[in-house]
Every structure is written in structure tokens, then in C-alpha cells.
Image (cartoon, rainbow, N blue to C red; front, side, top):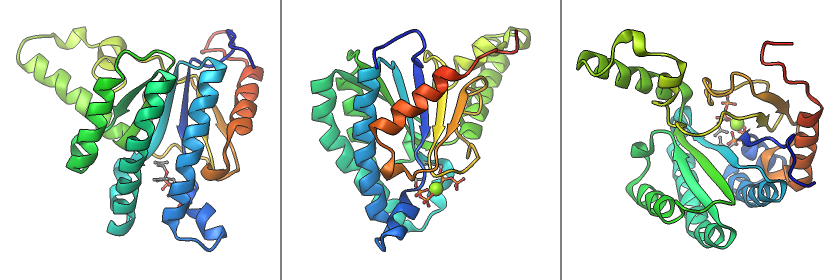
Length: 236
Ligand code: IPE
Ligand code: IPE
Ligand code: MG
């Protein structure tokens, strides 16, 4: 599929169903997360092929800290491994890496890996891959409100200066276009605290497959479905 005006500039994905994928096979949940990392590679390649500019992946939510400690540990270890292995690939494929979320809550090793790869790939331009890590939209929005309130208290801005544009500039996604297409795998019809502000006008595609089974053709199909939609933005 060649890049066209109908291709979403920004695709955001709630990568759900790793645990159920593993359970169906009688495997530990960790194996589902490992298989899910393969889907990430394939989907980011497909986004480059399509000419998508931004791909945001919900990899770990603020609420996922409430999972059993062994699962959180396994997820952080997989993330470390993914970052180490992915670094070469990002260089080769000219992908820029960014992260949104409360990165300061991640283990130090993970944080260091992440910040060094983000710095190293800052000038890459084929695709921006945004990892949502320890991310929660309510936390992001309250942090933005807090920063604006602090500026107002310090006299740097007036309350009346706060509009949607200024507010958006205080979110983790400042400078990024809003997602055009939001995909959730595993069939759940919910947002789970993901990008609440940014998805105001995103087209939503829910896919039944579990994330480790979501591959290139599934993404192409979701984009095809997006292309059939008539986006109205409240107008006619
Ligand atoms: C998505 O798969 C990955 C993360 C949330 C980290 P899940 O781990 O949520 O898998 P299910 O939804 O329990 O099957
Ligand atoms: C959303 O999936 C978070 C990620 C994909 C990282 P969850 O599995 O955590 O969401 P719920 O619990 O089904 O709402
Ligand atoms: Mg889940």
C-alpha cells in the first residue's frame, strides 16, 4: 500500500491480550509478552512501509504496577531486552524513539537505556516510535494542570491564557499530532486510561485477535477500515 493522504499520520495501539494468548497455549504469561515483542517489530516495519509518521504503543500502564511483582519484573526485563535489541534496528531503519508516561517510576537500568536510545535516535526521521511506559492519561492530564497552576501562581501566565493549545503543550505528547487511528487488540471495548485528551477525534478499530497474533496484514486491514471512515470532526 503506497503512502497517501488517507494514511493515518499517527496510529496509537493498545497492545492487549498477551496473557490470554499464552494461557490458550498453556504457557506462562511472560511467554505472551515475549511473543508480543515480535508483533511490535513487525508493526513498526509496516508503519514505515505505509508512510505512517507516528506509532504510539501502550506498553505499560500506570495501573499495570498493580500486577503481581513477578509479572512486573518480567515485563521490565523484556523491555530492557527489547530496548537493547531494538537499538540496532532503530539505527538501521532511521526510527526515532520517544517515551511518554512516568518514566521516573521505571527501574534505573531501564530508564538509562531508554534515555540513551532516545538521545541517540533524536534526528531519525523514517518513523517516530512512541512507547507509553508507566503511562496513564489521568496522571498526564493532572500533571499538565499542576504545571499550569504553578505558572499561574508564579504570575508567569494568567488563568485566561489557558486554552486547549496551551494545555496540550504541557502534555507528554506536546508537539506530536493527535492519533488519527486507535487500535485495540483482544476485543475489549475500553480505553484503559490511554491518551484520553489526544484521542478526541481518533477513529477506533477494535480487533479480536490477541496482540501476539496481530501482524502486518492485520495492520493493513485496520488502515483499510480507517480509510473507509468518513471523519467529520463535528462538522458536515
Ligand atoms: C497486554 O497484555 C500487555 C500489558 C498490559 C503489559 P495483557 O498482559 O494485558 O494480557 P491479557 O489482557 O491479560 O490477556
Ligand atoms: C491496557 O491493557 C494497558 C496496556 C496495553 C499496556 P490492560 O490489560 O492493562 O487493561 P485492562 O485491565 O484490560 O483495562
Ligand atoms: Mg490486558
